[in-house]
Amino acid sequence: MKTKISPTVVGLFVMGALLLGGIALFSFGGVNFFSKPERFIVYFDETIHGLDNGSPVKLRGVRIGRVVNMNVRAIPLEPGSGGSRSVVAVVCELSRDVVADGQGRPVDVSDRDELQRLIDEGLRAQLGVIGLATGLLYVELDFYDPARFPFAPRAGVESDYVEMPAVPSAIAEFQANLTEILNDMKRINFSRIAGEVEGLLVDT
View 1 (tube, rainbow, N blue to C red):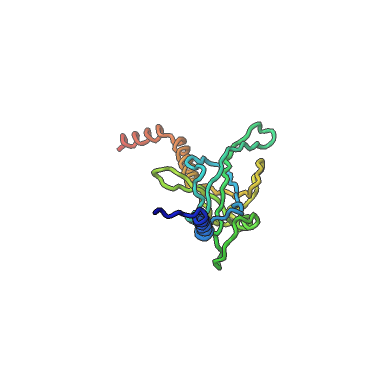
View 2: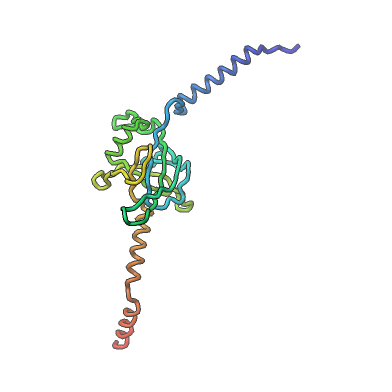
């Protein structure tokens, strides 16, 4: 004889499973459906080839967010120059409860004023390389000396997000140094040096 299962029992079982799943998400997954994560924007003056939507945002190597949007902005130059230059605007989203102060208390990075305070204290963004073989990039956050890297809102662009100042990446510095070396090499008169060496050999 088959045992008839009550639909009420099945319904209660399903509801209980959904309730337990929701409690697990809230308790262990850090999911918060009722608060909007804070976003900030970074204007990079260098190429971001290798950075995509979903790329990590890290603080001292710890992932605290992700890249959610990227676009190119044309910034007008000084009046009368008749031109413009471009920067890449990268919008990043921060996760909650991943940053703490010196006493271990969580820092609410979803608070716009709190994020601005960290920027005033020297929080800056920089492009980092995930792997030299892959060429993938991420946004690295760290604290720098505000006197050396002062914060000044970029003129000519507008955004609804807090602006995070950017510092040159190691890639950009390497490219700048390489360009400077190549320019110095172009100024070397190799023909004259070769002639002097040849004359020295003949004299010898």
